Amino acid sequence: MEERERQLIRACAERLNALLAGRRPEPLEVESVPADLQPLVESVERLAAALEASREFILALADGNLDVEPPPRNQLVAPYKQLHANLRHLTWQTKQIAAGDLNQRVDYLGEFSIAFNEMIDALREKRRTEEQLRHLSIHDPLTGVYNRMYFTEEMERLERGRHFPVSIIAADLDGLKKINDTLGHAAGDRLICMAALVLKEGVRGDDVVARIGGDEFAVILPDTAEEAAAKVLERIRACEAEVNRHATDFVVGISLGAATADLKGCLQEALRTADLRMYEDKAARKQGRTPASPHPAE
Image: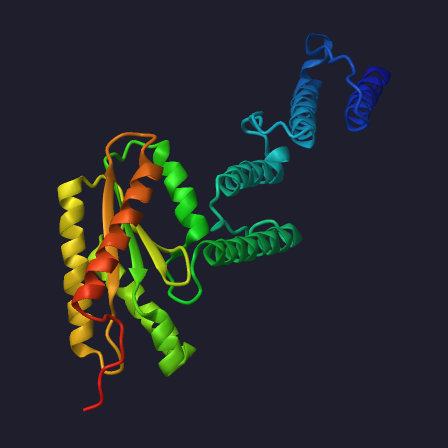
């Protein structure tokens, strides 16, 4: 082997070693190489170019740049191409989680997958707990209807919305104290639950039925004018009669009053008017019959 050939081989080795060490040596001049050694030099140059492209791609991945595209037809980065695709998909999954989708799972990144999935499970449990706490915070535990806090929130929300006219029904359970005194508080609780059932059966699914006091209820009817609210009162009365037809211990009597707010800023006034009309109804009912009283013994 001639000295020139030895020098060329040493130059090829030095170029590869420099690339492996992270340096960028000057390329070899293929034109000055003897014809029988040009294939070797060309192969070294292709390998050097592949190593350099691989290095740049891997450095970009290490910096978190997932927009970089892997060099084409480069088998040296084949494993990193799969990692690149996995990281891109993982980024998409993370964005989905940030948007509230907790149905994401990872099964392609070994121990990271286990940790990721455990995090998702913990987030799901946290969400379930938050939903349970939210449900408990806005519902009456005895009847399952909404509580006073939610009723107040909904009134404030409707004041800012576009669901006018809004009608309000004030409802007061008649004779609860008498039932508590004569049949006990368990019977009184059953009476309260029966009243809540009557109200729920008489309104639409998107109407808001709330227990706002011991024997006080209120119903919010969005997009409901005065005539429609009057028909709702009729349905509630029909439900009340149907429940009482099957009652064995006591009958349910609910005093009702309704009012309508046609414009924003009038909801509280409508609530006060509905409350006054409810007391008028209660006074009239007392003159006619005694609701919510124990059935006489047969």
